Length: 552
Image (tube, rainbow, N blue to C red):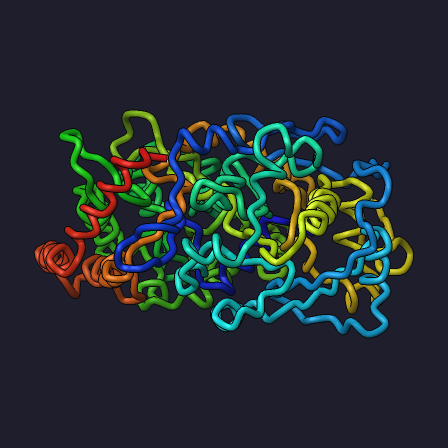
């Protein structure tokens, strides 16, 4: 199972991308239960970090890059001794972006429960509709014992206050060195824990944790560029990228240089992902920067030069991957999760020699050091019900420790693949689900607790090698933006301004400007309108947050 490709599918299905800061709505005052935690309090309660050493990767983590494994371990290491549970019975709700398996006669569920020493009744719900089932659970006091609540869906839940009222405070069990009682939980990256800290207390258990997650890579078709005699392109500026586009563009053969690359342009043009501070110390949003205007002018230049695929100009994002696989466009932005073995299979089906590669980060000017804003350490967080007793919480934390076993361990293999020779067989490329496994095994437990993300592509070690090396070389350019990983509950009266609708809707003002249907003056007018309709008040709110809690 490839974690990054899996998360890419989840994010696409959810229609959400993690961003800093983590946001939730609250009452108009933003008082008690506002969510945010100061840096000094974080230092007091942050769970200790003790990384795993038993299963060594082929590509070590450098500057926060994810470790890479060329193959699945052949000897499954046990990381948990004894049975974690005390025989308790619990309910759990998680999203699932796949067919929901029947619990009746499900030997996979039975095997996991036996290993856990407890009865964990899994109630997976359709991931596409998951955001709609959460509000009734909260308002009707119908929360299960354990539930997954993605950070991008906390907004309608009044979450800054709901944590205190409805969810278990895990601080007494996990703060500082206390987490060492649960070694697999202690191995989770600190930034991921921070995503589950609300109101100065630890409430959430992070899953799919990472130290280096960014919004986009800029990919290119390495095999086609080789055939064109370009080889490995050297792009160190926006002008280099434009000139490369002119060189490889061939509309007569239905081969355009670019997809719509707007999302990626935030990196080379230095557009912040959240609020930022000017040289004078003023707080400004990404949409108030000069950088975004420079990026719009650059993309408009690409379109005017005829270098972008017409379907991309028309806004057809549903078939962008197919256009990339078929060679109808040779450069496109996509998430980190797109660089995986399933992409290689789809690409090879369209073009036998298909190879995806990514441009190293660069600056638009070609000078200075590239920078890339990091996304939150985790966006999927699970929570325990406040009604649980201390002994039940401790039992579930021991179970969480089992679920968080590292990649390639005995426990990880059971949780992700089930029983050997029943749900999966172990081959040269690692575990492969059987027909029974495909019916029974689902990614449900991994939404309750799990290890840090790794890079592994069964049967495609070269993809692991190039993507892991890319991360090792580029992770150093990642930086924590203002309010990184802070759970900030925005007052309801500022929710509209905080949605940035003129800039985030499908046909937003930037989309119109780069296509020549609006002007930069129209954009600037839209910014002023946003400012007068709550944007300036939102700025004052964030200034107050910064003054009280700090930057991150």
